[in-house]
Image (cartoon, rainbow, N blue to C red):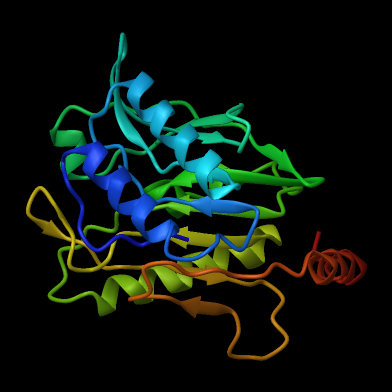
Length: 245
């Protein structure tokens, strides 16, 4: 999960900063998750090229946050997942444009499909789409939900929004029996004058300890989490045995 310190309206500047963060140490994992609007207003071709270059350089599949794509339907908040070979493995749109986006003319996109990696199913959601449980309805086979966020907030300080995101992430993880990883901008970043809350973190529906349902990473520019998928399978089996499904 990448959490750059500052968002720029220049998508190339954002990707340059992300490449610098990812290059500080080898990426330890299969997926690199970027925050929402990493590509800002880059053209679709430029955005895809930057995501592909990052995936090749990191040696990992990259869920590339998003960018504003001008389509016949209007301006869509859209992202892509690209593997280290450069193959496009998934695309996704923001279904619920929020607040300042809507006033800026961003229109709802289409929900993206899941993709497979190492025999497991993952899906990317863009920010506010996590707040609608219907977004994940009927997809009980998801092992990981990756959330690219830009958590602009009207609160005086980041703590209230962080608390809301923590509870929402845990609720989705437990309801849908899946891991939820959130990559956001640092709380010092801003979008159209609105400050970011910095809600990067990881929700675990089946932690070994009672305080392990959510791990917050509010200041780490690059953070990682190891997924115990065998434990997740056992948790699902136990839930079914007890009649939760």
